[in-house]
Amino acid sequence: MDEQPRLMHSHGVGMAGHPGLAQHMQDGTGGTDGEGRKQDIGDILQQIMTITDQSLDEAQARKHALNCHRMKPALFNVLCEIKEKTVLSIRGAQEEEPPDPQLMRLDNMLLAEGVSGPEKGGGSAAAAAAAAAAGGAGSDNSAEHSDYRAKLSQIRQIYHTELEKYEQACNEFTTHVMNLLREQSRTRPISPKEIERMVSIIHRKFSSIQMQLKQSTCEAVMILRSRFLDARRKRRNFNKQATEILNEYFYSHLSNPYPSEEAKEELAKKCSITVSQVSNWFGNKRIRYKKNIGKFQEEANMYAARTAVNAASASAQGSQANSPSTPNSAGDFPAPQPVTCTANIQREFDYFY
DNA sequence: TTGCATGATTTAGT
DNA sequence: ACTAAATCATGCAA
Image 1 (spheres, rainbow, N blue to C red):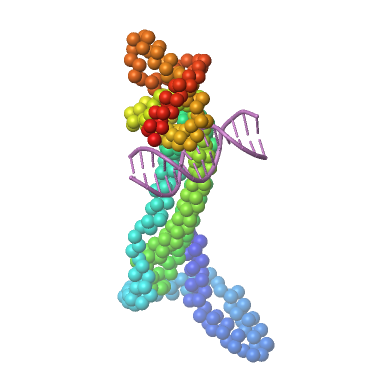
Image 2: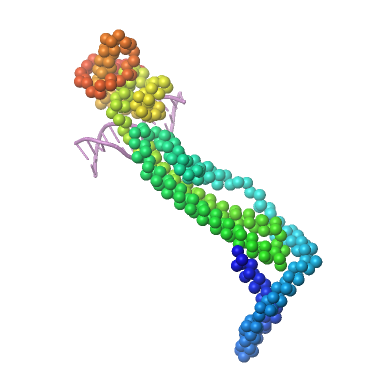
């Protein structure tokens, strides 16, 4: 912080204290004979060597006197005005920029992914939300996504370190420039307004660098997401029981295998899957059954028989038999193959189509 | 490694 | 919004 001003001082003093030096240099280069040149250089060196603390102080005093001259502020203002009217007016035109929409998008995304949000809670919440969106069955979610979370927090850490580094560099550079300009403003027409403007220019430059950082972070997160959370990549077959419940419903509603919203919800609950997974399952099942009924005949027979048995036992118990979707909790019972039943089912289905 | 099974997504139609 | 149909991408047994 002190370094720079001092440097500036000595520089200023050099010129102010020894105006003849520059003159000498010019004369020296202009000369043609080597002897004279050598002599000049010798003189210059001599002068440099004889710069004493006293002469420095002298120069300082002279500078101070200049600064304290009663006409100085007026002159300064006039020069500033002239400058404002010429160079700065161009710069001033592009002064007010609206917040970059792209930057806002990136910010929002980073926030949503829990990269730029609050520490641990945000990240895991986002991961959980993402997991839910991916439609995970919930059985092995934590194990599934621990790797994802680890990678995400790695990205997060890199992002924050880099961001901090940028911010620090930006601040350092800004103060550096401000000091420089402030110091310069003692001898040159640099108004505080101009300094302010320069600072905002610097900030803009740095924020564009920040945007690159945010962009690449976003890309990294997207790649991570697609690698770890893409449902298709992480497809898991439903467990046997869930498949049975779904099949049970399907084959017992072959005439109209389109569960209502409520039915879907109930099935989802029973199978520990989401409603949309139920919809997917039925969509797939319908199309695949229809495409190759023969292949599903055996399966159809089995579930039809099971439903029949269920109904029979239910009615034997005196309870209602109109709930065929209720699965038999006893997983496997010997399934007779009533061919007529299949035929019936098939007719029902054909009727529907 | 291969081929089928299967859950998810995409596309197009209503 | 829901569905059929096609397609994708993975799971899994042989």
